[in-house]
Amino acid sequence: MSDPIEITIDQQIATVRLNRPEKLNALNFDMFTQLSEAARQLAANRQVRAVVLHGEGRGFCAGLDLASLQMDEEFLAPFRHGSSSYPNRFQTPAYLWKQIPAPVICALHGPVFGGGLQIALGADIRIVHPQAQLSVMEIKWGIIPDMSASQTLRDLVRLDIAKRLTFTGEIVDGEQAVELGLATQLSDDPLSAAMAMAERIAQNNPQAIALAKALYEQSWHGDSAASLRLEERLQNQVIGSSSQAEAISAQMDKRPANFADRDFTDYSELAARL
Image 1 (tube, rainbow, N blue to C red):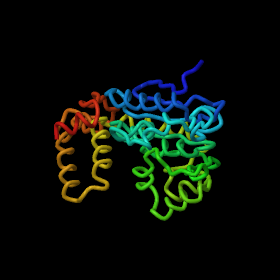
Image 2 (cartoon, rainbow, N blue to C red; image 1 turned 120 degrees about the horizontal axis):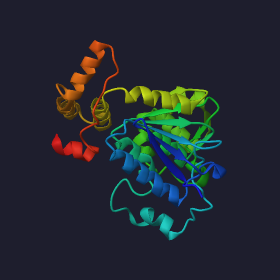
Image 3 (cartoon, rainbow, N blue to C red; image 1 turned 90 degrees about the horizontal axis):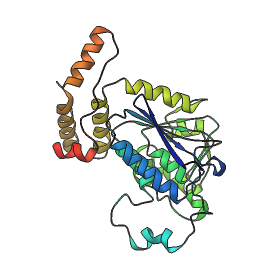
């Protein structure tokens, strides 16, 4: 039996595939666990320069597999009693993609519902098929989005749009998703487009890419003084470094750059040195 989450790494590009096509990649407990572990594993891999996240079969992810996620006390425990840390076990499969020090590109086709959409929202870039179907669908089941949408949806759409999508559970297609800000760009072949973008990103200085992601993730909602200070300290980590020197040399010589891997494992390690 195939794993519900499969990871491959080739030429410093990681591909993460949701692999329950017979269930439209609907999320069960194993997928929650394995998606979170995949994100942690890739965050710790300094050689990974880009990540492509996609779903096998007819859609990216149809949301929760309610047949396997029974509404018992085990399921409800984080909500009944609170969690010991955040993101909690239901938030991590979506939120941890933001914490990987490499760009995460999500290829979207077919249904992208509920928890599936929230996983996609955790990516840095979303490439969507025009006929994909996206929905903040939790209201259909009488609940609210609880897989970190409060921290991701807010960065992509206006507050009134977020409320409309949440209150109605309406389904939007790929073109509407781009217009609203849920998705970055359209493609008739989202996976190929995502791989092409990953290949382009992987040619750039991985240290600078990782620090740029850290800068935006940590400063986007911060006060201006703290954000400008962070910008200065992050730039100090890369300017004048061997990786920057290689970027300049490659441009001057009109040749592909030969970069070393980034010099930190994850963003907690980076924070300790700032």
